[in-house]
Length: 444
View 1 (cartoon, helix red, strand yellow):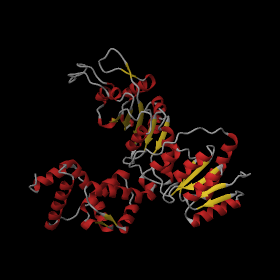
View 2 (spheres, rainbow, N blue to C red):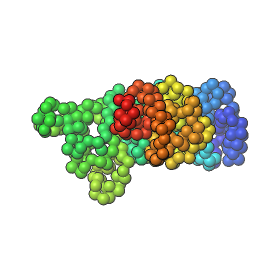
View 3 (cartoon, rainbow, N blue to C red):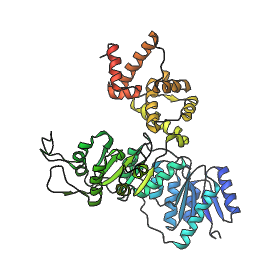
View 4 (cartoon, rainbow, N blue to C red):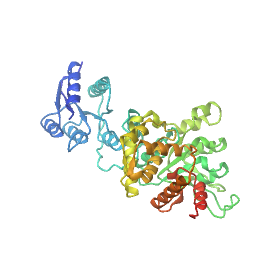
């Protein structure tokens, strides 16, 4: 049976407010609906509500202000927040502020009903937990998206980050695994400690032990001095082991022992050292399949996989592409002091792509377009040409096209401060290819 006390609904969209009020009324709830934060504050000042449902973006104040006021009025209040523009910052702020649930618009009415019923159950039977309100000093991140999958990831991050649990981040290349690892570190009690990232796939197996555990002088050929390993360097902080699926079985055992004992023995050392680090690992491989095939230790898999965060490919959250593309557009306009504009046709074409390289591919393409857009206008034609060039399609190069290529290379080099590595990335070519082009054009 629905709770007898009235619910407070705060929604500035008249149509949405009417729909939600009517739906909840038909479900047997008493609803007091208001359209502004001012009206909500007056309601909360003069009364106490067991459940408050509020949009995030309202007027000069937000649903986070409503959340604070609701908790001040009744610390047992369950606040359900809604938004079509969710971000890592708002979800983290909502969670830390004590929000009971966060719904990404558009949502099914049954989703709201389920959230309310869950809140009722908790109000009736469970003791609430005191939660600290710390929503004024959250870092800005490139972790952007308001799709349902991203909102779920934000919720998981807000729960796991404050703990010391090992986290395994999985997902395709370019989905932002290191960014998630940094967010875990930034929102943990280890924030003041170091964050050290290691690409396990780029280090030879014979050197990985020395890289992570350290080595004593003379312990191997070329060890002309004592070397401090990553785990010792990151003491009191976080170590991010990227491409964890690339380490070979002998070293898997050594890593397992470290995770169990939290101590390291540098190569060639007689004594072990205790270190205090949190390990966050990532892979784009199917570790469960590797375990089944005997290529990855099951006990290590369990140690790393205490909490798993699966990042979706960009093609599975296309609704986030406009947010991401405009974020990168603003970022690179500011970096290069430009004023490129993304047109409707350009945005539409971006949303239609498969994006095998995911967010990273989109980011690099936007950077390139900002620099090279004719008259600062990124339309469908410009996006199509950039995608074709990035895909390596062969085009007959006339003398005029060679001149255009020369102009583009010079423009990108100027914009990147003559940083050839970044220029090559913006142009979508290998650095050695850029050097060959510069040499051929007499620009070295």
